[in-house]
Length: 561
Image (tube, rainbow, N blue to C red):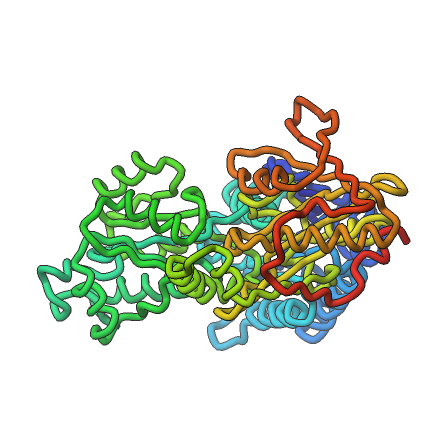
């Protein structure tokens, strides 16, 4: 991913540490405001998807005297950031908090204006983030507080080479930047599975009973309560939560209902496997129930033997080492979040994910009771809402391209800026669809990207769908609608691209059940396959329509405009 780094101190060595992404550095000392103010500057000409503003508080205030002039200059800087963010809505701006060390000797009674300055800046970027979807807070101050100023700064490097931060400080900044960039391109884990005894609470419920468990608001049991609070926060961000425990189910579930200090409740979990079967077996069954990949699961268990057994049977799963000191449990889960679940924001679809999977369980139960698949699908009363992607859709659409693997024809990964460019390019169109039924709304789960290859040939660049709606043949209806609109707009052929991966067999099955395609010569090295369909007279889709498709607007008028 292309990003730019602006600062009021020398940060070239920080940029060099970010190996997985292309980073642009503005040339010249302290030119960050000029770069922001000029839409034609080298920074914007680089066309970054993200811009990081890493600002040193001491240097930001160099030469200023008096509180009011300082605050006025900060407001001027904030105004430039606001203007740049408004002018370039497709770029994400990550603006750092500032740290202002005390540089003057003063009595204890005197006011510390450094704190006022830090708070004023933080409030300014907080307002900017709340007002602009593309402004984010990069919490440099927190990195400094966690590391300590003594470790984060280097007086020797500053006086000898103009480098404000120590090698430790630079490494922490670069690591946080890389984590943010990765989060925009790499699929995060989807599911956190938890053991119970000595994991969610201290003790063994079958032996100690509910009253004998360590779980409280104060004292040793508070570590488990604080751990549960962090788990609940993950659930609110859209991480699927599940339980896998060797236990008597009735005893275990009673703790959720009867213990006064339980933070988590049974309804917080999308899937529960509490029995005496091997945990790897339960995890595999749970993954099948949820229709997610084993590699999207993180499993936490205090027992090292159980952890090794799961890793041995399911090598794709992530199994962190449990802390030997359980007082570190809350901090441990924060590290797990950063390594496995980190995200720069959560969408509405993310936040309602647990409800979505609970609804899926009801669908699965109905499917087993139905006399046929046709009866089941017709009984769901599914609706598909299809529309051209707008500004409010690009975040979710980009997220789907980055994390969808099973039903994804090409697995091309796009950023929000990439999608805006595709949508604004002549002959390119981005579509998004949501799916709902009698059990609830699955949210925006389908993305399609069409390009004009020739005057009479359209190309399906990307076609993907969340695994949560697999098996309902809604993908067939969406493609059939595309074909009808393409035919209306004068296209006679449709090329469908498919790039095989280890995971996207469902996407290949979809292409192979289409009718009347011919396989074109393709690039053997990439493995990409291209089918061309003559759509002038007939659609390649043969599956019956089980859902009602609602097109919110005329979709393809602009494909050739």
